Length: 278
Picture (tube, rainbow, N blue to C red):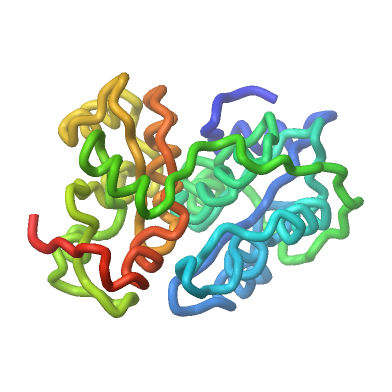
């Protein structure tokens, strides 16, 4: 299978027609509309794609660990096997366009040790814009044999996130107004982790949802102080869209750590400080 982490629509179409077609996962999701992703999947998806639900298969139930804690290994493993994921077959994940949820599946599969995980750059929008067909039928696939071994990707807890904010660069991937504490449409407390630096996820993609080139991404991260040798971490509201920031970092050759609980977990402890403003 050709290509790096990111895959173009035409390349995916060619790979699907080949002898070793990848497993394709549709992970579309909308905040505030848990059923929205599945409904969109049933209205049309990449042929052969299997739907994976963010709330129940790529996350554990909300609680003190945040709104989208990492899934229990057994739950994630069952979802991947149900979807036909194999250890010897490439996996391609996609969402609607900007990879903000596809990157969560990418990160989890990488963390579980899968060696060939790709993201459809631009998501389903890119597939449609390329004039490629959709299907509405849900294909039955043979169960996969992938056995996850979680722990392959770096993570930090709340204390670790605070340490990175002080000694390295902790990137806040939420919208800038949420970072500044001007609005908070989801969580009960507004603001950000002291020392964190704002770089919303949409800063990493163009207006069609495709990732900017690595040189441009490198410059944008450098403006935050990210450079080789500097410890980097990322968080968002619930640990989902921060994975897109980590994917953008990976495209520049830099590894960053995920704070899985993110802001929704940070604020459960009233003793943790909250900053506002720039």
